[in-house]
Image 1 (cartoon, helix red, strand yellow):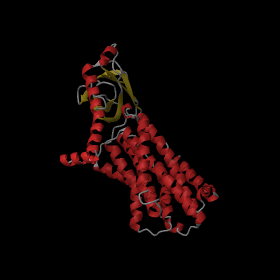
Image 2 (cartoon, rainbow, N blue to C red):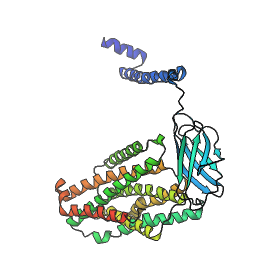
Image 3 (cartoon, rainbow, N blue to C red):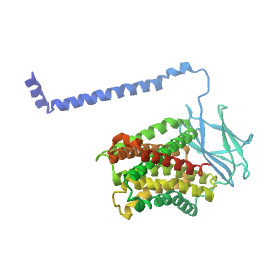
Image 4 (cartoon, rainbow, N blue to C red):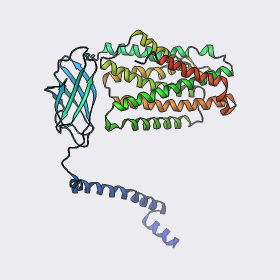
Length: 403
């Protein structure tokens, strides 16, 4: 019988292996074909029509961007209901106002439209906007303080870049400048610095997740904010963990690079939020607040320097690490001021949280290996003191920037 199969295979020009691949492909396509037929039947037969009791469709409307200028109010809304929806009326401070919509017509599920209201807003006052849909559903939006939205100009972008460099790149550079003084550190000091890195990254992890969840709550329901944050953080963590383990466990410059990437992704999310505040005209950043951001980020540079104290990187390497860690703050400010939505900040911060978690694990493992005592090294006095110092410094300096 085997001879007959072999003869048939030779006659048809196919091998048993290729036949199996064809059968596997066929069985792979069958479930998709059945699913497609089921969806087509559901669409054409419409068995759900028997459940129609006249109730209006579920509707959801989220305001993602608010612009105030001389022409009035412009609000970018996103529809998230079960069916396409229509904005029938707009109220501002309980009074109905004429409005225009761009693009006009129904707003499909997940789509956006600009609602333009010629309302004479008053500088410094609060205004309440209410959208009334064609089904009678209402959705409110608050403008806490009416301020003209800044116009994006090259001068504004340059100013944002300077501010981003001051609060993002400069503190990392200052932290890295401690490198020569720390090179002669003994084992206990090394453990203290590595533990301090874990402490500051641990604080950043908690702070990043908190901020990501806050932005997720402000995003449109269609994006499933909390689930998006968890999934993006997990994907970021697994991807970076897989990349870092391609050539064994990262040490030295490789580990410092991963620390810089994690901090940079965190700063990207913060930059998006600050840029959005600029776009909304709500960024009242005083000198004290800018100094707080700078002090808050200095420890990040020390954390990046800790794994490379036993090597001699070039100045270009230090410059690259500083740009990787602090540069995203500038990019985030630009993106946030030009095109901002809460879900983008939530996504960026979630990716940063996953990257930071990966770095925390890698630094912890590196600390245990370099000490030579394994997990017991985590309970030594220098390590416990470093953890407390990292978390404590970040917490105290965070008090300067929380408003």
